[in-house]
Image (tube, rainbow, N blue to C red; front, side):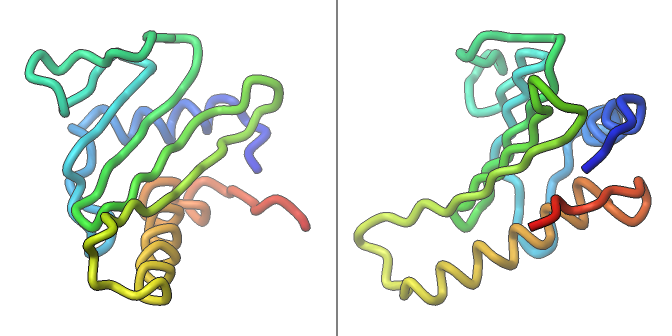
Length: 127
């Protein structure tokens, strides 16, 4: 949890200002969508097809292993939410266990690399 709006802005600004991150741990970032600015590198014109909203913070990263991670601010509380998922084609030879391990590894790297809880004094939600 982060109850300091300037810290939230600092976290998202750090992910944007020097160019979006190219990696997260051992995973390569292959696409970035930034709903706050309207940027989406998966399209030729680099414009997001989702509505742009400068009043909210929302970044989605797609990775070379099929994982997707999204960081966004809450609309009702001063906190950052994150979501991670892995998409595997039916033809994949990877086991469910291997996919689950990759997702957990990416989630842990996502938190440490992008949110940097130690640096920013972030606390996990209790429970």
